[in-house]
Image (cartoon, rainbow, N blue to C red):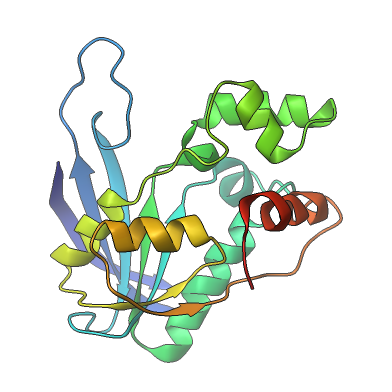
Amino acid sequence: MITRYSEARLPTSHGEFRIVVYRTGTPPGPGGAALGVVEEEHVAMILGDVAGAGVLARVHSSCFTGEVLGSLRCDCRAQLDAALARIGREGRGVLVYLVQEGRGIGLGNKVRAYDLQDGGHDTVDANLALGFDADHRTYDLAAGILRDLGVASVRLMTNNPKKLGGLEAAGVVVDAHEPHWVEASPHSAEYLAVKRDKLGHIA
């Protein structure tokens, strides 16, 4: 399901990382659209030697609206930057970047959810109204990438208990949970509150 496809040096404002691109899946049959079934590309950003235990790690899902277009409806860009900055300061770590837009429902459906939110739904209810789970993501691919990199155990930067549980269920040893809150904007405060209150995100 997952193949290391290419890698190169990648200088960033947080240090010189190594970027590794993984390809997944085979062309699906009718109706096939699950993560890891269609052909996709996912990324690992590596700093230092990450083979072994106690690796500072972040598993991050793509957010085109926040990270590319600068949307203030979420904290995704700030979380991505904060994770890379922290790995840069430590000098050793990995960020796994998965194509799981909109908590796994895709960009088009995420924008449909935005429209429902503008009509009064919160981020959880909007997903449910569209017929999806509140959080549709999976973490098997992240676990496979970490194994391929030789990561034996992680100190996971996350606020999401489902992510912790999903990675552990996929065989990742989590030595520690490292809270990863960033400052809210006036546009994202309600969104973050719902993640705490309805999805159980923890500090």
